Image 1 (cartoon, helix red, strand yellow):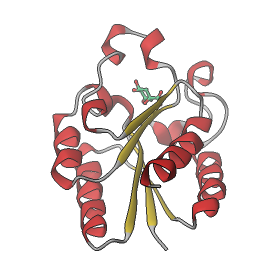
Image 2: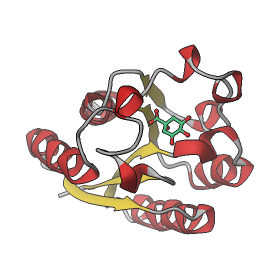
Image 3: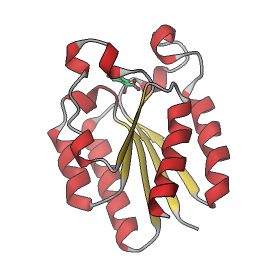
Length: 149
Ligand code: DQA
């Protein structure tokens, strides 16, 4: 059984109450349930995590890299939150481990403030899902499985 890491960056623990017009009413626990349900089709073991700390996210990507090396990981579905727009460290972690990452954004970052239009993650990502609400996580899982064939 391959592992699937689903990583969430800063402020995503506030889902459900945070700017519902942008992010909807589902909580992060709801997102986790949706992901677990979607992953069954591929027999992935879901490891679902959230951190408000950039270095913790870097460490988790490194951990995923070790699993990948051992043939135990499918990849990562990753919503880096605001670190998307600032973090060269997360970009480097993905590049440095070669982990297949599907970048997910709940909101359409391209119809929001200009500072959300640039992503440091996208050039290192295997695929991107933007603006599909929390269903984007499910699309990310299907997309990753499809890419891995
Ligand atoms: C987000 C978009 C980011 O710009 C923002 O900082 C977030 C959430 C999204 O899921 O739409 O925290 O990644």
